[in-house]
Amino acid sequence: MNTEIKEKIIEVCDAKIAKKGTNVGLSFYAFFKNKNDNPVLLMEVAKWWIETHKLDHFEKAVKIKQMILENK
Image (cartoon, rainbow, N blue to C red; front, side, top):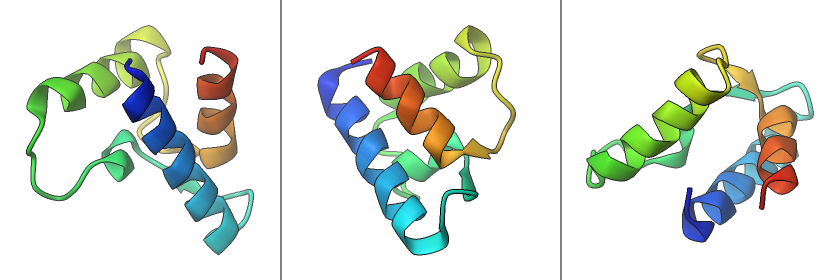
């Protein structure tokens, strides 16, 4: 994934954690607007989430943030 989406993922995770606490979960859809304006990037993140890491639909934001930071 490119640096821009990684930064967006961290930003969204931080916001969710700040708002709802460390137990908050999210799906990869949280990183995109409701309008599917970048299907290629959406599929790239979906592949990373589902195929590469075999994550559940909802995962803890702290877990996703840590995974991104470890591979930045």
